[in-house]
Image 1: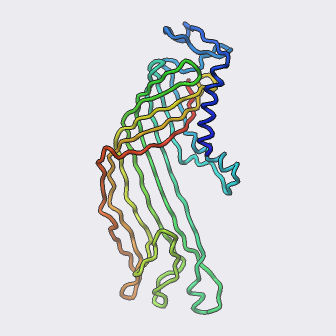
Image 2: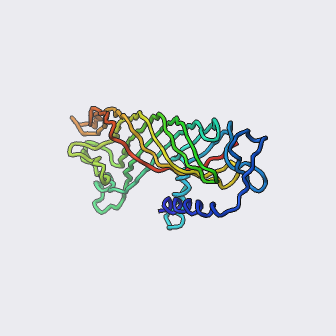
Image 3: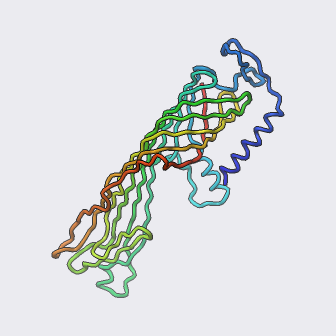
Length: 293
């Protein structure tokens, strides 16, 4: 919802900007070009000039934080560990080279109480508990190298372009159980986490490797940037990616009771897969801040 509000806000700025008084003058000391340079009242160029270098960061974590803040979400935090970083070099006023690095390092843990089997064995009325724990990891990385074209005579600039990209995604699960296998307890009480099927008829999952996903392809983008201050902008863009993806085999380790002792066995869940369908694509929207110097 906050993204939609922000997008509508940008459109409002377009109309407001058309009525605002702006001084457009040719500045020889900035760049020699037939197109006049857009400056503010102090004479500072608002838009990046040939040779300008821009550095930016994805705005989604900030929108998510303030959105959760206003709707009263508990344990709200700034998820800066899942964002993107932008580097840009302006060839001239209408073209730029862009490098984008996407990074996502997600780790979450879920703990639940279960009956303490050892205490219950010695006292059937015991209410002692132990903890079962689930750890989920989702690490992502992407790299994009794009050529960007832009058009506009005001603070609001339209942008479009594209280029090659590479992506990586790794999913993994780990489980720790409070009750251990033993001769007197070869069916320990264990919690089956919702939707993860970690408790099986013949044992329990201790880890699950869901494979490494590599993606290669090209991306196209179109969007807009608004320069709210000299050399500073906030932007949004829609992207379309065409990808070839390959997924490594999936494995899991299972703890079982066998021949009077606990054992860990490894099973292959899936041999891996790949996708070479050029029509298969996905779209997403990015928001970001860029500062030039």
